[in-house]
Amino acid sequence: MGALWEAIQQILTESGFAKLFNFADGGWKNLIMIAVSLVLMYLAIKKQFEPLLLLPIAFGMLLVNLPLGLVMDPQHNTLDPLNATELAHLQQGIYDEVYPIFEMGGQYYWQHFESGGLLWYLYQGVKFGIYPPLIFLGIGCMTDFGPLISNPKSFLLGAAAQLGIFITFFGARALSLTGVEAISFSEQEAASIAIIGGADGPTAIWLTSKLAPHLLGAIAIAAYSYMALVPIIQPPIMRALTTKKERSVVMEQLRPVSKTEKVLFPIFVTLIVVLLLPSAAPLVGMLMLGNLFRESGVVERISKTAQNELMNIITIFLGVTVGATANAQSFLQPKTLLIILLGLIAFGFGTAGGVLFGKLMYVATKGKVNPLIGSAGVSAVPMAARVSQKVGQKENPGNFLLMHAMGPNVAGVIGSAVAAGVLLTLFQ
Amino acid sequence: MDMKDAWMALNAAADAGEILGGAGMTILIGLVVVFAVLILLTFIFWLFGKVMSGVGKKETPPPETKSAPKAAATAPAPIPVAPAPAVSEGISEEVVAVIAAAVAAMAPEGKRYTVRSVSRVRTGRPVWAAAGLMESTRPF
Image 1: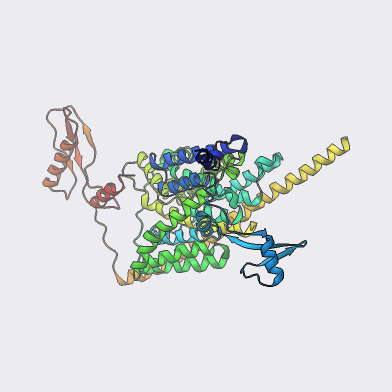
Image 2: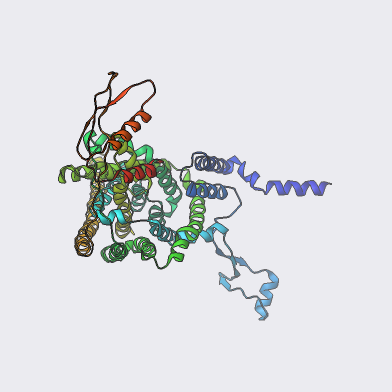
């Protein structure tokens, strides 16, 4: 009976529970992280905040914060000293194991391989920047660039709304003037935080995985949360910066776009953007490949797979592994709160940049452009365009800005990919 | 001590200048590059549109934009006997009747409405297209 009791005791002391409730050993940090993941799951399930990504992110976070689960443990090699028998065999030349032997300071060690955790392997797709461009492939298959082709001026709004990214970069760098280590951001970190203002999840993850992977969890969560909050964040800024008259502008109907134009569009964009800014090639290239699949009309099967099955699979891998980077050590930092705050600033300035440029176009075109479509220049497709539509319709119920706003909206995707390319070139 | 403080402050100021200068440069470079790329794209697709619409015009005549009659200016009036609405030319009596019926159907109960005039409204979008748009954008 005693042996059984001892065995049970041993199992209990070696279990995750023991570690989790071992507060002296920092188990409370894991408990907080688990609570955070539960809140995120609540937001995803009950409030439907970008559930497709937030749910796997939240669960990845839960999984990685359960002690001893080792789901994110990297694959590695370990060196163990040879025991007496093995040493004897080695000296007699009859050592028949296939492991490499190292000699250090007269001691012999054998090297053996330890495989990593499941999520660590899946995480390689994030680490090497594979998943985000594949998501872009699917997005390309789903995006109609027609409104942009018929009104190319929308490109400018997609550029103006990237203002938030660069302003936030400045803000994040300025924080390091305080000299406080806990809230100082390096250039790489600042660039990764700033890209939240692009309002484009895959782009943010892609850049962060290359520049500041330790911030991945916080940045991805901030980016997706704010994307879900676009309908709440944007309208007050849009209303504050525009007059009633500007908001009620009815725009001319877009001209129809021919198939030839739609087919040539992805090819031209790829040529120009990639030649000008090679570092944006993975994102823009995949986006445009997907769009060519769509518009060419000859590879419908591939297009369907890329925008459905492939994208769903990648979304699962991306979400759960990005969530799994949010371990207590890297997430429970004052920096995380700052990232969330800076992300909001980035969104706000991005929206403002787009709307202000919209006002400029309103003046330049003598009142033909409704400045509200500018806010859609922060990607967040199609949410931001819907917000333009909604705010515009409040002023003039017969006004349909949706298609006009889709132009800057899809231009914003290209714009934020270009901005990410610039930041990568500058800080890698 | 004073010297050291001053030196530290100077150093910090130099650092601050460097950090902010670098960040300022990033804003500048970033915006210039992003705008340059997208302005180029704007120009190319503007040109593209010109060329394509030129080709398109030769091939097919532009579709005629049809404008449809729309009710306008319906105001509540307490007059029991309504005068005949002013109807602009080219609108048949049936259309006027249908519009009046539509107004009556939409009016809240217990209130009287009078159709004072019916005139053609020129819009770029046919009413049916507008109705379709309204339908498909309602959920947003």
